[in-house]
Amino acid sequence: MTRTVSLGGRSFETELPNATDGTLEGHAAWWQSYLRNKDKAVRSVGPVVNIVDAFCGSGGLALGVKTAIEAIGKRANFAAVIDTDAVALDIHRANLGSRRCISSSVATLVDFHVVGLGEDAKFGYKPEVVDDALASVGQVDMFIAGPPCQGHSNLNNHTRRQDPRNDLYVAASALGVALGAETIIIENVPTVLNSHSNVVSTAVGLLKSSGYGVSMGVLKADELGSAQRRNRHFLLAVRNRNLSDEYLTEAAAGFMENPLPLSWAIGDLLDTGSTHLVDTSPTLTLVNSERIDYLFDNELYDLPDAQRPDCHKNGTTYTAVYGRLQWDKSAPTITTGFGTPGQGRYIHPLRRRLITPHEAARLQGFPDWFDFAPPGVAVKRKHLTKWIGDAVHPILGYTMGLCAALALLEAEAAQEAAA
Image 1 (cartoon, rainbow, N blue to C red):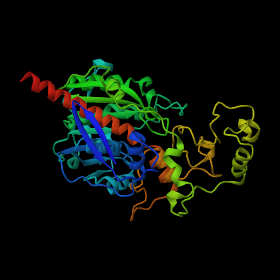
Image 2: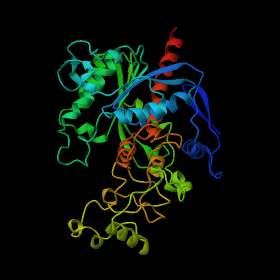
Image 3: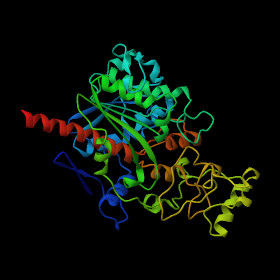
């Protein structure tokens, strides 16, 4: 199965094995084939793109960027990956062949000083990598990062926009500059723009004063053709290039597709018969089993207040909690709570159970070859919910990778025209 990507006046074709249900065409067919592919293809030809991935988790953003790089005929090399979760680094390495795994906080890897705030911010001196393993990675073509977003999320009312980890957004931009990355991609939740310490505008000021063109925007996974509604704020910085404020959203508009239903993503996983941890649902309490039965017996998708816990019986604003997914609609955002009915709308639409980690991974855009429990890595269910629920949907990383590539191709074309 072939998909053609057009960038900067050039066309690139990507081949995948035909693993669809045979009734789809175009975007939907290619991505379904991508999701159902059980064999990881290793690209062995083409120019190498060296990447450093910070706050990498299990590798959702990296996977999307890798797919974009391969779509334009190049090879992705993860020269270094960084996260405080050492086991997640093992997952990243097993699936994406990461060269160096650094289990440290990004803030300890770079020395920098900020003068000023907001878009007037600049570095007091050139940022410097202070970790020997990271300093020796050589040329860095792309730096990608997804700093912790819990402090910015509307789901975290107690610490919202006052979490000290918010400063890691600024540290990420400093590390990208210190590495001399040609392109920088930083991801977060849309409410990062409301941070009390203005971390985004400060990062923009630091990057611009360091010679980067910067563009930002919110990308929506369902508008890019996924089966999940997931919105993320992205910052794209390209060294020695001019980018308009609208560049990112205008470039991403070229990759827009119609949302896809839940059935498109997980329709072949109804009854796999597998007893593997990733293919089984968590054991439910009796009361939660009864709530699920109530939904199915009454053909409902939202649980009435009377069937909810006592704290919900006078009404709740979280109506999706204890909710049932719909087969013919896109799923809501998959979070780390997908293993608990009281954390969101995670009840399977056709089976009296919660979705499995495998189904959640499919909705999150991970293909079947991506192994969340590789040999030699001790994995528990709590690990799976964290790694899958926290991940950046690869379709977002794919789009960002293509937008970054387009910026570079356009700059090259402008230089050739001026020569």
